[in-house]
Image (cartoon, rainbow, N blue to C red; front, side):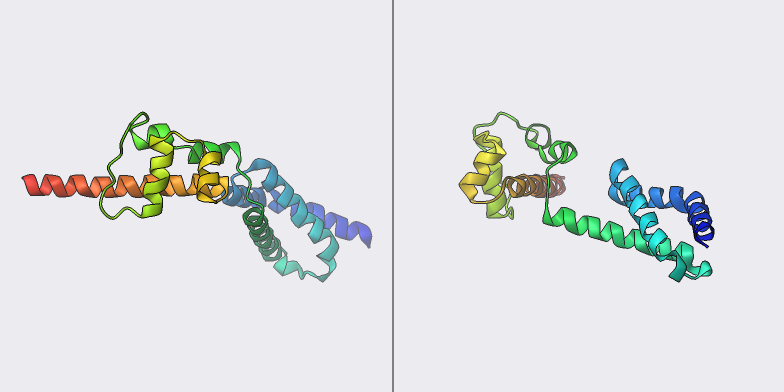
Length: 170
């Protein structure tokens, strides 16, 4: 009887492991984590294969994968780590702001005060994120995120201001 279930698991693995991996990788964008999640799904399938009706096995595998991905994101949210990719995305000071060495910064009307403050600290005073975090009483990750959001808001307001100026001067 055990060999019958082993054959079923092997058959399921051969049929669906690549698709499950693609699904996990698409959602997570990490090769090792996607592989781990596929392994976890099939380990659970080995334990539960007897109770899964044959016509529902594909749906069951995808449901378990979706739940594993949700669990992964919950854990990542609880234990936020800054990876090299995050560092590249969040470290926007020099090239995103378009003014790496400035003495004074004029903020467009409507920019939140907390965004003005972090832009001043990072772009004008050239402080590191850990120093900014200490000054503002927030975590370093929060400082990076706030700066990233401030840059986006600044650029959005600047482009609106330029469009308005062009419309008025025509």
